[in-house]
Image (cartoon, rainbow, N blue to C red; front, side, top):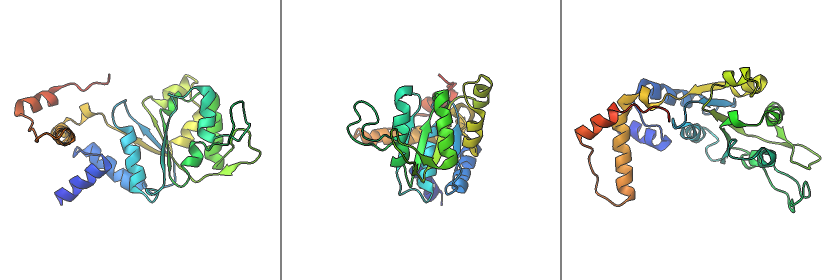
Length: 230
């Protein structure tokens, strides 16, 4: 039984026996087929995208597309066309129609990574899409219905962003239907030996090297590290 559980954890990419990780996996199993939007909150490096992928792979949408867009990496002038697509002739250079991330994710999951970085004006357009479940390509005359599961991530406290007037409160409530918080490694150090052994095995296999066991002294050093947010 322990072997099958470990294999399942590895398949999802969610290794760990700390109560916080056990609870997270239980919640993922509960919400895998829910239609509500998921808001993943956690510090940078806690594995928010891994958790999003696990939610997708655990539910009935697993055979559909899993599309990711980093809201912080795309200029404001391009973000709308990236999300919603455009029709031919919508702007200079639009020589053919193009689907946006919402249409590409139809029947599957769309991950809105770093949602707190989305420009304020764009947030209103996203809110409308979440409410109406339809998108309007740039230059289009008619809206297009979409069937997309939305997962959003943030490493910021969105309630603070709302107070600072950089994030819309109505969008927050629309996104925060199913909230999940990911605990950083420094608060679950009992998982470090398991994770260290796992990655040692992975890296040895990738580099065609015999498995190198981690010494007790090295493991003590790993567990003793602060693992603070950088």
